Length: 142
Image 1 (spheres, helix red, strand yellow):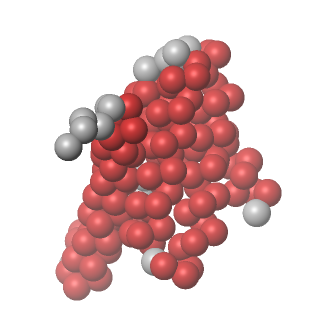
Image 2 (cartoon, helix red, strand yellow; image 1 turned 45 degrees about the vertical axis):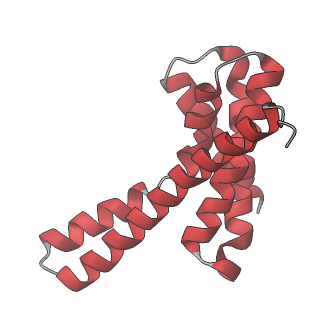
């Protein structure tokens, strides 16, 4: 599990450097990415890859909102770095490789899985934004 902690932290932190984000956000972005990945790895076997990705990206989105508010930095700084460990890049590569090798059944299955995971990442981030807006907006008396 420590290998997951370290590699996901450094992956998220490296993208902060790559995208030329503020250096003061390096540690926070690394932690957000690490916590999202650890949640994903912890629950993937029980509930499946796409639902685990949804839960992890929701956690990343919530942590991004909190970090943005606390450190007075745009949310996008934390969210881009935070979802990097969750992005199914290797799976997308394998789907394209399977297409090139004319193994269409496997390629369609892998491609569909990749799209489900990518959609789960997007849905988790959107859901966290919706929850944030609901919490910030005062409720009207009915």
